[in-house]
Image (tube, rainbow, N blue to C red; front, side, top):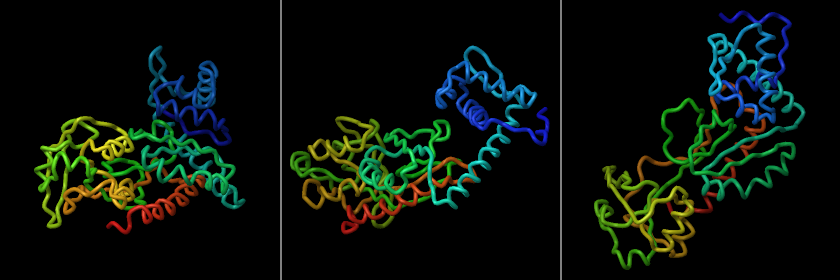
Amino acid sequence: MFRTIPDGMSFDLKNLNLFVRVATLGAIGRAGAEFGFSATNTSQRLQALETELDVKLLNRTTRAVSLTPDGELFLEHAKRILEDVEDARTMLSGNSGTVSGKLRVTASASFGRSHIVPHVPEFLRLYPHVELDLNLTDTVLDIVELGYDLAFRLGDLGPSSLLAQKLDDDPRLLVAAPSYLEHAGTPETAADLANHACLTMHPREVWHLIDQSDTMHDVRVSGPATVSLGDAAMDWTLAGLGINKACLWQTGDHIRSGRLVRVLPHLRAWPDSKIWAVRPPGRLMHARVRAFLDFMRVRIIAANKVLYADLI
């Protein structure tokens, strides 16, 4: 079994980081590429770590890599060592007033384009030593496996070990273009939606709607097309293609201008949607992550007030 780490033993932190990423990804080549290491250099670094510890950490085959029992035990030690080092860096950077390092963030594409992207220049002017890597996608990524520091997500979060912080409410309602309602008619009940063109992310999607008396209405809806991008669904809604269950921050301006109208205004989407910031589990929030989150939280709330506060 894994032996106690001898006093005075020193580790190359890059090798520790590399080992943790190999354990997370289950692939030596992919992990090494993240650090800019060749396959040969990656293997050499892992072997050096094993030599330092005098244990075998990894089982290697031509197709896969897995942790040995000693490797599984050492993984938790390695994570704690790296967290302690980052904790110390965070403390020192806080004392010096410097926030620095690479920051990897992902966000819903439409939401990120509306609420995150416009404020990035200001953030980087305030924190010029931060290098931001922003991935905008409506695909829910595994931020632990892919090494992201922070994700902005919408909706109802399922069970997860991720750390979640609510930033703001995200009310959703039914909208359509006047042109669609003129030729298809206006639904009068939730059940009527089953006979209308509804723009969804999945074929035959079930919409959960709740009325003012808290009565639930589950309606299986369908439409002429599905799409995974919120902005595309909004473009189709404006073009009169069908009814959309959309975020109020997306629709506020269009409702005011008359380009969209509310459908079944006594209903709202259920469960109540929220805007969340989620990050990998652990004891530490790096200074750069905290700075970005605090900065964006203020601007997200302010943007939503402008976009839809008068419509609630």
